[in-house]
Image (cartoon, rainbow, N blue to C red; front, side, top):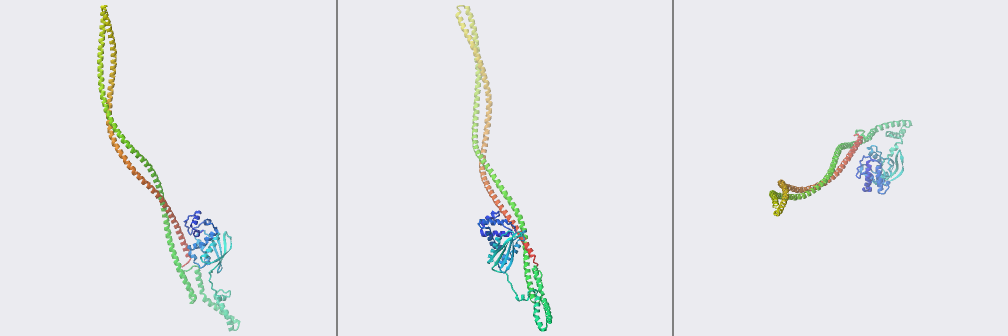
Length: 601
């Protein structure tokens, strides 16, 4: 089905039922509301039928009535598209040319089979039309008849004579009576009577009438039939010859008319007869000259239009190519913007997590710096305490030296005691010896010496006890001396170890003091770095806010890029449609050029 017809149908539906109804119906059948239909586009028959069925459902009306209303209004739509076709005096003249119009509009569409409107002129105000179509859109056809009469402000009466099928096509025959006729006839009754019903040539008509009129005159003049007949035959021959000579230029006129009928306007034939035939020839030449100028203008204008259209078509083709390139670039930019927005969003999430971690680290660093300052203070205190401990150990070392000296002195005195004990032991031995001598002497003295013997025995017992005690004391002193010597040795060892420990502690205290000073410096640096990191973290938080804003901007850019891509793609599609229309315009121009080529000027 031709795109032009479908476009006018949709336009009529919008006017009759409104845009909302039509848009709903278009969406229902899968068409875009803004679809542009090319004049030469071929649309499948089922699609407009589905559209009309959907509209009839939405408006709760029969499809037959919808089709008839489309037909009535389509006349107005056709008038907007093709106003020149409506430059007719009445409805009958308009309908008589409709079959030619349909054929002309669809002959450029390959495989197009437009409906035929075979018109039979029955009378001046009566016409019979046979509507033949493979689609059988009878209600639409009747709506067109009613719309045509309304457009020309004329009343018509139509009667359906027949409908059926022949050769696989449906048809309807309609008799139409019009209010206005189109024919203008002039009857020359006398000339018609002179033809006697069978004479078709003018020279014969003149000769025959002249002969008939001359025969009575010749009969009365000659007095007999034979002479009259001879004279009449001579008159007939002479009249026929003269008529032939006079009317022969009409043959040239006829040839001129045949040439015009063959669309030949390039040559001029001058007929010289010094009568009205010559004037008729001049009128024909004037007409040919005017037509020649008009067709020359049309051909030149069409050539100019064709050249312009061809150039415009080439520009449109370049625009189409550029538009495709722009569409691809914009699509790439849109894809890049989407990818950038996604990556920016991911980066923002990562930076956000890093910022949380960094803020946590900064907080921990602030706490740690405070703890570090406390630790440094404790280290300083510990260094001071270590110094004090070193001094105390030094004092202990001195005390150990004093104890060591006392131990040596004690060992010496123990040695003196042992010397005394040895002397006591010697005295005990001597006492024991003296007591033994006394006992011997007392024995010698007898009774008189018995008391002395008792004393001597006591002294010897005391001496023995003293010797035993001295022995025990000596053993204890030796043991004590050994223990004291061990103690002195241990004290000496501890003293040496204490001296070494004191040296180590002094070194440690010195190193600790240096390290404390260094830690103090490092702590100051760390505290400064922590403070700077806190400032940088704050600034980074501001940067993060900016990045977050950039992410939002990236999303907006992505949305804008997608919208721009959609607009550019739509623009590209419109360019393609424009290119298609220009190509079709070029075809129309070429077809018009071919049609004008039939007229030879």
